Amino acid sequence: MNYNKAEFERAFGISGQLPPSKVPEIAFAGRSNVGKSSLLNKLFNRKSLARVSSVPGKTITINFYDVDGYKFVDLPGYGYAKLSKSERDRFGELMEGYFQSGRNIKLVVQLVDMRHKPSQDDYGMIDFMQQMDIPFIVVCTKADKLKVKEFKRREKEIKEELSMVDENLIIPFSSQSGLGLDTVKMLIEKSLGA
Picture 1 (tube, rainbow, N blue to C red):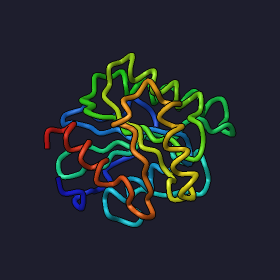
Picture 2 (cartoon, rainbow, N blue to C red; picture 1 turned 135 degrees about the vertical axis):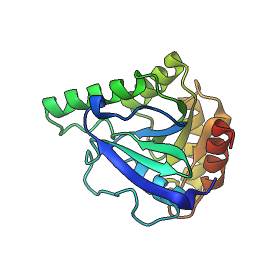
Picture 3 (cartoon, rainbow, N blue to C red; picture 1 turned 60 degrees about the vertical axis):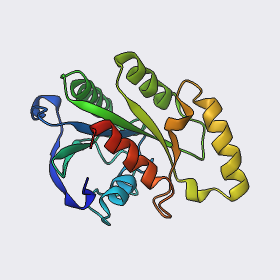
Picture 4 (cartoon, one colour; picture 1 turned 120 degrees about the vertical axis):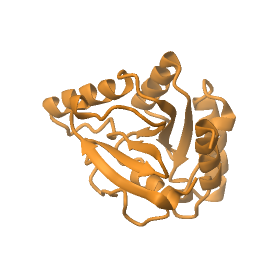
């Protein structure tokens, strides 16, 4: 798969706007500010195709990218407390609409911050995917922000914290060094049969 062929297509703010699902989709989910845009930019080998924000809660649309004929779908970051009730309701409707509209989702790349224990929202998302039988992997972002000793400790702890997930599907990742990038690409391609 040629990730360099990535192009931003459109952003959608309500589920009724979502286009029909005609080709396999890879979705990216995680808390606000967990590093989804950084991961996407690393995959696409671009600096700013996916907009990186220093302000959490900025992505409250579903963003579609065409990547060599497949769709990569950047879901809005969840768990940001400062959203108004109406924005939270819209967010819930958007996420539900995406997952329950019979889309051709081949894989969800679930991001968690490696430095911290997964949040209740992270656990809720993993539980939801398991119940809906949606294939997923867990990418542990910001690995480069840990010193070697901390990294080894957190790597062990996160496998225990996410004991409900096959440990081969938990990947430490750094958008700075590229740690884990090849594994993420391999699992995406495997899910697409590419």
